[in-house]
Image (tube, rainbow, N blue to C red; front, top):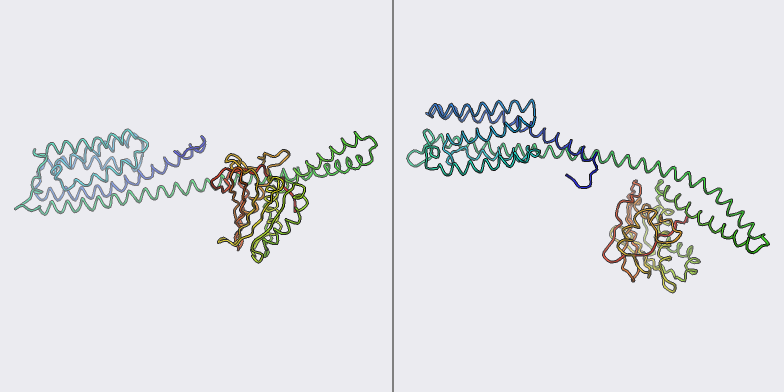
Length: 464
């Protein structure tokens, strides 16, 4: 049973497994009925015609007819009691035929492989019976070995050797037994392969249904969040504008200070709303055009120059200036903006953030390095989830949005970090776009490498 399944999933899994193994059991019973009867009728007829004693032939005929009747019933009804009786009688009938045809010297000895294989496969729901059959077969072979020097353990006419050579009857039965065993094992393997293929296809179909339902619910929720955030933006803009205007015209310093705080908080709420909007609309259609990652990096360094200076951080851009890939420049800029902002906010004063554009086997790789405190394993594991942040006032959507935009291009976002040594974010992008229409999956792990990771919190999302 797969670990981690809930009750409905377990019930469905058990239902599929029971149905598949029931079909395998019915199929093997049908096959064994046709081949078993043909094989044993031919064998008994040969023995009887060639001079086998009537008591032995009658005993063998009763065993074959009884087991054949049970196989026929299994084709119409695959119940547990009938399955138990069939296998128990089958083992008994098999050893009756073996004992009457020479014991361990019997040419039919190898046919036990079919019985053991069928029991191992179709008795999964009855482990006690499977174990009992295995022990019974083992004990029966031991008994036959102990009776090797008795009449039960000796070959009798027409199977008895003549002039030191195996009799023609013995060779014919041995050949028939080998063919029966080979075909039996092959057919059982085919039934198993077909059954597992059906189970895999059905479970995969169910998984696709669940993924589709989950994606539809996610899109619906994000649509509601986007509409709500859009409606909130208008009153926030009014609050910010009016409070700023009143703060400028206020004669009381205390009142002006309070109104400035209101404006600042409205601005912070505005950034949070912008983050939700970016996260919800991050996967609209791509507008593909030839794009130079180096040019985008230079543009971002100019855009963030003032913010970096306020933080006491320098931004350096280097790498391949001629590299061209297919990308949506607006979305690529958005993703890189979030990553570079994280690096700036994680860097101590006097350090630098390096952006390096490289050619790569996949197409392009943009490395963003900082000299921050690094991230612990726990932080790197949790930043892949939206809304997680260690920065006061952060939204926790920066990494989620960046990863979603990169993956939509068919690329990936990786982090390599060590505590006290900073963090490197690597954006891998294909040269030719391979768009992915899936939503960003918060449950899918970021590609992380060895080392302690920490870069502080994801930055708030900014519109380019």
